[in-house]
Length: 524
Image (cartoon, rainbow, N blue to C red; front, top):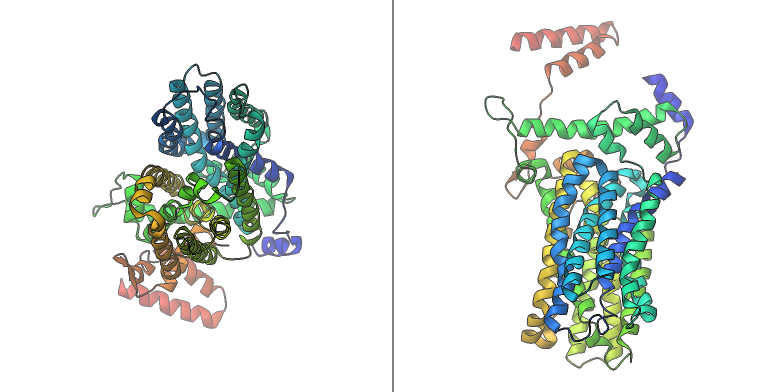
């Protein structure tokens, strides 16, 4: 009502209020990504001491098992999130980290370590799905960028901690404690779960009248008045209702009957989200095919002759990772997502060219080291966090878990591909082995420039409406954008409501309204 709107104007709610419950929920959920980052790097330092005498292939299997478990976790996480809620799914993942860490620390042989690594990979794959979704659904629109970047920030801190712990525990007697830290960190997270709130979006999706959802919104936002809470609830429900209407209109046949569809197939068939799906997948491919993991896997090539201890070089890159991600936190809500992707891909492209020139002997090793550092920095301000962040910003309701699950599976597959085939690429191309990555980065820049929509400060419904408005009369990927704009015509109830409002405005307007009503009746 008008009185409610006036009341809300008087309240002057601070849009950037950060509450203690929000901080606790974000930190507890982000610990999963910390644990994932820790396990990405934990196998580097203790390799000579873990069951000495193992073959290179056996150790490679132990490392690669992490990537094998990842896609499975990404598949399961979407189902857990929808069936058990975001909080329940996060707790399941925490238990997987606890169990996997114990098995790895107590393993009697390298074969058991391989099994444990696969189990930890499942937990890590689930984390890459659940944490971005959870943070995206809890965060206020103006803080989505900062809180969304927490996933990448927690991950790179985990990598750095694993490198630092290696200086102390990477020895014949300490490596088991190094693995046991995975369980210790997950156990601490489990003890903190009373402060882990359920996603209000998930609760409202199951019951629009949920009092629990309203209580959580009040705690997260620090609201004092029920009117503020109900306004926030309407934002959630309005977007969900809009997507539900779109889904219903796309899921029926000619006779008006609704048919069940695979969510992934339904996303590609929904013209309003098809470009968003394509953008999400392109960003995930660019995240891995930019070559960032090839740089980390084979960083010894650049440190040889520059730094005596390779572990020092690896730790240096880990520290640069953290600093660059902190810069990304500062930039994320000041610059657009699209802008940062373009700067990131362009900066990485230039760094990649310098790396190739250095490998050909035209520049010194120190220049090569600087190029690697620049490469990592530009990755962290754009292609690192944003492909995960934009999924929660592009999709609502039933689509978000499916979109995140598909994105994670594709990311893990590309990760495995790079780790497996880069040695062969390096052997074939030699000093030009980063050439293919430079091509991918150039294509990523062009895609972002031409097609990638800006998601900062928008809801999924607003983003789709903006695409319709911006691209009216144009066609992307066989999409009739102009036709989409008129896809859902006004209903008879909407016409009658509009005419009733005209009638109430005065005698002259009353006549206009009656004439329009009579005209509509005669047309029918």
